[in-house]
Image 1 (cartoon, rainbow, N blue to C red):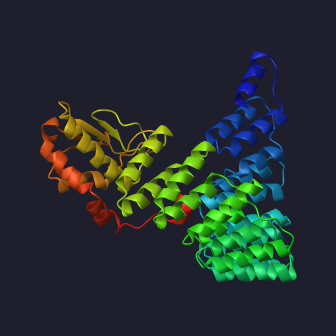
Image 2 (image 1 turned 60 degrees about the vertical axis):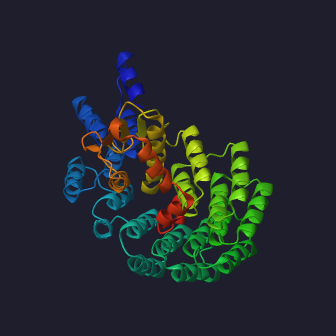
Image 3 (image 1 turned 180 degrees about the vertical axis):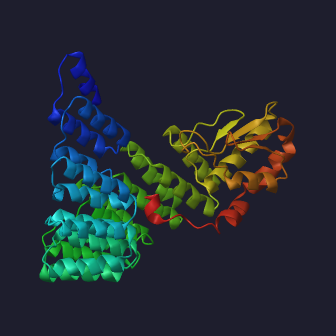
Length: 439
């Protein structure tokens, strides 16, 4: 959009207020505050007066109360009156700043200025409360809106989502019950959100939810089936049967296969999992960073080091992990436990090679780490465990191991730590990350 703007000048064309409004809207959606301020200054320099659309574009960027007060003063000074399109983005902006109390304040100001809220106003207010407040606040506000007749399906879905986030699965089910009985009519999002809330409460509840959906004439989608699968992960045969059913319907996606993979590895069905991995590869369904870390850790917990190495190599081939080079190991993308395993492998290989150069281990800095050094505790823990002197560089986010310590004796020590028994001892006590983060 900005390229087109600059091309207007080169073509000796003068942008008007509508041109600027389109640009402002585009920049505001991308949260480009500096660009928005620059464009507004350009408008004034070209003696173009902002209109209501201009100010409404700006309102979504107002994250501070003083900015909002200044904005409203400028709006009134321009002879304009705030409307519902002005206040709604201001309410949404509170999710990133002050929180639900400030959103309620803006909503009250809106009413005091005799601006009638629409259904979007109410739903945005609920969204902010669901993000920044407790589920009790959300439900209290929902009851007020329901009494006033300002609710729709999206409103109730937001409340179900708030209950799901708070692990209040009973609250989510009760809201869905009310929708089925009194309206508004639930949609696929209503059922999927309720399913997510009760995903840890057993397969019977999940299957019952699936039946309720179909009884209401709502077709389950891929999210529905994935959630039902994850709720019954301990019965891997059932999970595979459901995955096959999804394939027949053309619904299975990468997440579906990752759910099934996690179920198989948790139940130690490694050969079946390998076959499923081959199917994923044939279908060009990649694993993401979280899934690779989850699956490798699950394998290490049962001492399956060869499988873990295979998955590390797959992650490197998929460019999820950084390729290992002689005298160099980059741990970007790896979780702490996986980084420990890869460090042990590299230390062993470098020691067996009797390298004449030091080993440099990149532990987390640069474009993949938001510019902040994040030395993984596992790296230092391994060095201490092996009594291995290592030079730590906080500024560079790296650890360096001198070549004189990369000996056959070290290789023997590391090989012991990589034995099935030692892997089980170290990793079995580590909790698997949250299921939803993995898949």
